Image 1 (cartoon, helix red, strand yellow):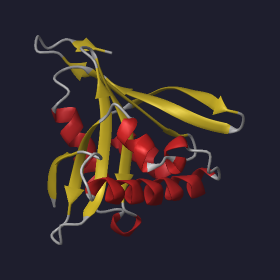
Image 2: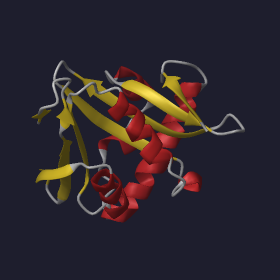
Image 3: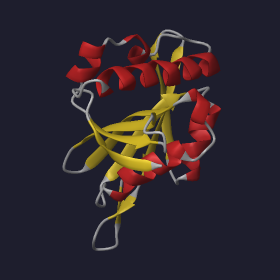
Length: 160
């Protein structure tokens, strides 16, 4: 598996990324029993309009099997999306993608949110050291949990 920078603005990658996103979020919708996840309903134009940085995981057949997107500021990295093809689940792709983002965080706090009832995603983030910091009902009946990972800064102290 190769992890590389990607962009939804590239054709035909944008269509492939949108297809992957819809398939991945359909799995989450089933787990949380709610299909009101905003990225599940995005168009290609909506996806391309997001101010996100992307990494993609490409298999030996050069198929996109996973992707991660994030936003960042001087003091925080927000993992906005983690997508794994339904046929490639439980192969460490999601973990590898998140670890790449963590490696580039440079001591900044890293945050992520997922569906409260998405047990596989929660196990992944908790296994990588993320701590639960709260939950919120984003629209009636749709709950997400928020996680944060405290990163060591170059001086060795922790921020978060």
